[in-house]
Length: 72
Image (cartoon, rainbow, N blue to C red; front, side):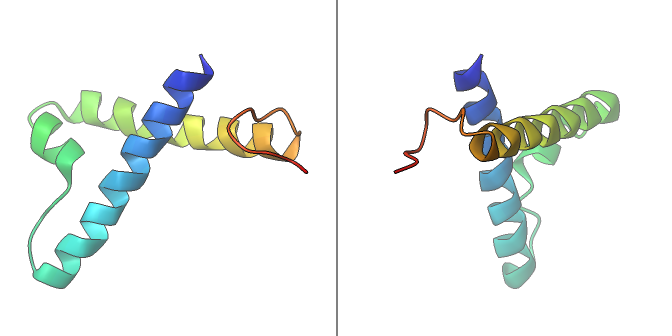
């Protein structure tokens, strides 16, 4: 389960990075929209899941339950 959370949060982070880069290049690099733009409900679900995964990672980090980083 944690691996799925990390993957989805990473996909979201990369997508936001591409959106930012695209704004500098005057182009749309939103990969989620490119892939799922024809299905706005599915696209919204993906964004919602990515957001939830980000919150789960944030909680795990501050609750010191995160296995992806060291707390030493």
